[in-house]
Image (cartoon, rainbow, N blue to C red; front, side, top):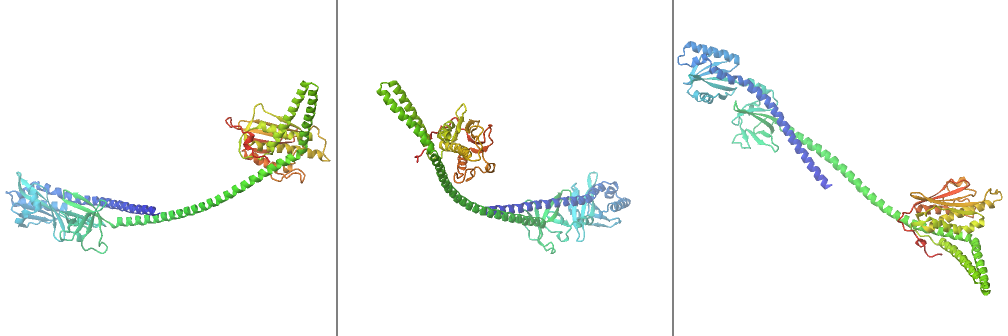
Length: 587
């Protein structure tokens, strides 16, 4: 926040300075536009008098008045023409100045024939300039009015015979300036000659703060370029202490420098407004950032709290999951043992039959060897070996089925799992009088699963089908089957999945429990016979492999119930998992 505050402070200062600079430039441009207009009107008013002096100096009647052979008639004619021109041009005075200092003047449109000789007249600046061949110029202030004098030499035979001067009253030109609300001044040699502020006239311009002992107008440069002027003398209460932004323009014909002034308070007010506006925005921005940061801190605190709660909850879920897995494993194993217990009678018959055959074949083999019939004795031995292999296969299947399942998932051969499941359930199916058939594809099918767990699912589905058929036949109201009961196992593969279907021709599943068949404790068996946990366990096992187990409409005619298992196909580079991948010590 401190860095943001410093950046905002810098932005406030930058905005204030930029606004102040732009306002200074605007005030300077406003003053320059006003100055251009006022100076142009002023100089245009004086231009006719500037040109009038050289024109009169070339008139024959004026030259006759300066001639040494002048007579009274020539002078009268010249003066009459001067009176006429003075009235037409609105000049304040026209003067004929002779080389001896004699001056003859006309005032307005009045004929004045008075003559006076002033030796110091020839030393006037405008007279000296005229006699040098230039246009003479001089400013005169008599304390009441201000005048400007244009002088031009009258030449006879290329020699100066006298000087004619046009005196212009500047009061009419100054009236245009009086309408301007802000100060306008005209200065010559850093002295104010004209102004629409009466108390500024004859004040000196002090550049760079150098006052030279008198109070006048202080001229200085601002930091951003425009020139500033501050009056250093007593003013009205409204103008006391004011500084002005200045635009200046030089007129080389008159030799004056004109200044138009605009109050500096306008740029200052603009800078203050910009400062207040920028400060308000910064305060709003800081408040918004504080609110956002406070919310972020609160969100971060809440997130940390939620993370801690989530970790605690996740730990509890893991613990509960481990407990559920142990419980599920116990239920699966219990279901296996229960299935083995239910098959004990059938298995007893399956074991006793080969054992009786082995005993019979062994006794016969002994008699045959005693009687010298060795070839027939060898045949009996081969039959004994075949019966032993049969018992070994049955024992291995039961042993694999009774193991506790592991948790690993690897490539499993569906062919092997189906063969072992059928071998386990064949004795019970034979006892129930149910045919158990398998339809195999041409090529081996391998899926990503657990060997023992997948075998448990198939055994459970086959056992459920056998139980449903046996329960249906044992009912008193059961109708005789139109065809033999049977269970069919089919499996095949697609591009991405393997599909295993277990179908039977039993009574089917009641429609009332079809949608909830995979929920715990939902069963169609009689009370006390089943807990309704076999299918939920099978469903979760298949889901754990990344597959699905569902009840579908039988795709083949004659079938009443079909369960479909979908499992992901194992890749070609997947290692085929042996039974030992899930083996632990058998119970």
